[in-house]
Length: 453
Image 1 (cartoon, helix red, strand yellow):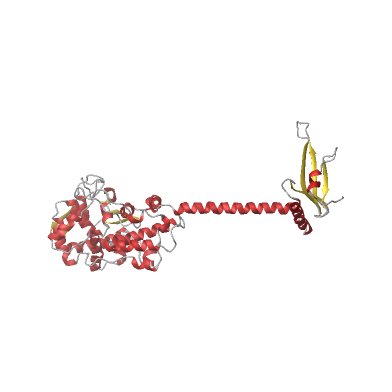
Image 2: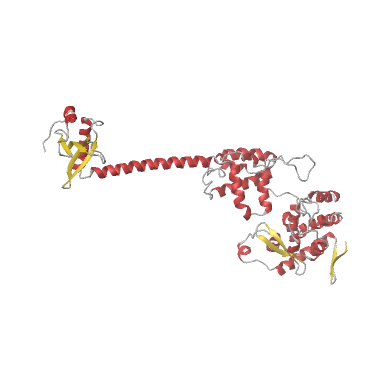
C-alpha cells in the first residue's frame, strides 16, 4: 500500500478508476489516514454518483477496522490528519475508537438528559413554590374534613375568613371581621417563613391573643400536613415554626381566673337560671353544669342519643368521636319535659339548623340579675370539674364523664369504667349540687318531679 503526501491538488484530482467501486490514496504523514473515492449508481437511474471521504484504517486485535472521518469539502487536510492521529492513539491503547465514540455519545446524551431533568425539576419546583397559601389551605381542609368534627372544621374556616359578610346574630348592617389567618392567605406557600410568622404573631397578639394562639396552632398543624402531601412537600421552610423568636412570640395559654361557679354561688345561679322564660336555654345551661360537657357537645344532643329507660346519653365527643355518660335523675326530668320540635333535644324554631345557637346573652343576663361574676359557658364545664372535688370523686371518673383524654398510663390502658359505675358517682355529684342549690328533688314511681326549691 503506497503512500503519498496529501496536498490539495492530489485530493481534488483523485478519482475512482474505471471498473472499480472505490479507490484509495494513503497519506504518508498521518498513519492510517486515507482518501476514499467511490462510484455508485443510485437505484432507478443510469447516472453515476461520485463521492470522496477521509477514512482511517488500522488493525485492532489482529482485525482490520475502517472508520469514516468526513468529506474533504468540510475537513481540511490538517484536520483529517489530526483526527487520524487521535484515532491511532486510541488503537495503540487497545481500545476500539468506534466503542469510544459510542460511549462518548452516550455520555453526552446522559449529560443532556441530566440537564433536561434538572431543568424540568427546577421548573416544577418553581411552580410548586408559587402555589398560593390559600389554595394549599383549601386542599388541607378538603383532605381533613372527614376526620374533624363540625366545630373544628368551622374554626379553620372562620379563622381564615376574609370577613365582610353580614353577621348572623347582630344588628343589621354589621359585618364580620377578617380572621387572624386572613392576612397570610395572600402569601405564596414558600413565603411562609419564620420572619413572616413572627411579624404576623406580633401584630395579631396585640388585639386578639387567644385567637392568635389558636390560629398559630392550626397553621403549624397545616404545615405538618404539607410535609406529607406530595404536591406541597418541602415548600414551607423547615425552621418556620421552630425558631426561638417565633416560640417566644406565641401568646401563653392562661386559665381564666374565677371563670367558674363556687359552691356558695350555686343557689343564686340556679334560682335565676330556672326563672328563664325559655326552658330550652334554662335546661341547656343546667345540663352544662351537671355534666361538664362542652357547649357544642350538649347543643348537638339528639333525641336518639338519649335513653330514658337505661338513663344514658351519647355525646358527640371531639376527642374520642362519641362517649356515653349517665343521664342523672334530675337532668332526665328536665330533658323529658322539653318539646320535641325536631331531632335536637335543645331545639330552636328560629335557628337555621333547628338547634340552640347562642345562649350566652340569656346566661349573662341571669348572672347580672344574680349579681354574680361573669362565667362563660366553658366556665360551667370548669365548675363541674371543681365541684366534683367536694364529693371526692376520683379524678378518672370526672375526666371520663367530661371527655378528657386519660392523663396517666393506668387510665389510658387499663381503666375504662362501665356506665353503672359512672352513674353511681354522677348521681352523687348531682345530688350534692342540688343540695347546695337548695333544690329538693324526689324521684317517685310515677316519674320524676321537683318537689320544692
